[in-house]
Length: 549
Image (cartoon, rainbow, N blue to C red; front, side, top):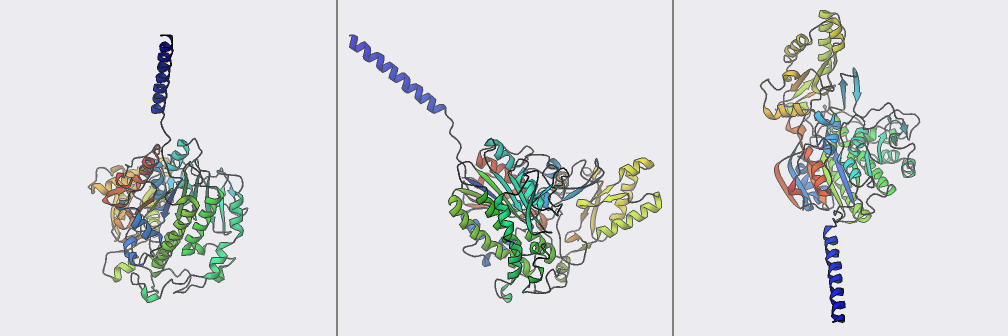
């Protein structure tokens, strides 16, 4: 009897311990599975149709064919705001929201509170790091009003995740990396070095110093820019020599760049070698900062600025644009192979998109009987300001035409007791007389004037009270705001500016294709869902569920 009592007591204790263990085990929430590394790739000025215009020329070992064949393509990805420019694109991709909320209303804007022009990443409180002779490092993300997905990853891991941004353009590195990044690095045209600011660190890390000592721009200049393939094989492009292209290096291939060695470090930006240099620096950053080395997810944001420089100079139909995209394909393929070795195939996630597209060169359109032309906005503003000065005896009442908006000097108008609405009405009547201008809309009337709903929504999404103007200008389709008679630009609501690629590849990504309409602002929340972290603080995008396994 005594023995049976002891055995019963023992069994009760054992069962209690087992039940307790099961309860404890069941209540433990396992750390969510995540990739070791997220790589964000933004091609500055990549039209969506490039993916298919050059598809038959992409290499079997290239990056585009790998992402299209093994990853997921969102075919109808659109930008949901205007103006479609670099700073807005990069900030919106990573914040999951629009300029109306993140505050980045252009590459620069007229600030009505500060009463001056503000560059998107300017920060006069910081100093350049990596160059003693340049002010190009006086930059930070302080003008961006919300968090990025990069910030949210840092927050989710108690700042154990590492985040690094890399681009030739400062805004292409700084805005994606966010407020809490471990580092952001950009290219100094005056020295040929990669730099940062004291916002991030007081000196360049050793790996960045070693990279600068390699003098890669001079090596690329020595090699020159020649076509990958015979000139007559570039069937998707116009002839090599066109009068409406900017002869940056000369009139036709091959381009001898040796004359720029040690002299002009900015020319590399307008060549495919700018992309290769950017990738080389990104690889040095990945190794130097030990990104993707453990189970705590890191993020590397890379922006390729050179497609934008090439596009502005030569246009989207130039042989230079085609050759650069074919070289980009090869460079990305090699980069993915390298990531397979460094991080592990299947251990990283990549997305590739663009910050905007581009219009055809107007003269290209005209010679093919398509609508298009140039609007010389600067000259128009000078003429209008001269007329206003004659009438009101006040100089430069139009202080800015940033981002397809006219900004008035309200301080002068208020001091003189002049009704701003009278000026706006007069300007509206004058602007619509211009052949290439479709509409001029007082921004105070944006939600009451007849306007197609999608365009109205885009303009609303681009409007910020203290960083936007008084009169919105909409150009006719195919027309551009021009400063010269060569090249092209971007910035409007039209599909050639707003239809962008969006490719996903790697860990957690479902192979496939999505044809429904999605938006640039959906990238950040999709990453948040993939990583199981919070969306950025101003997020208005939604998860693209088709992308996720």
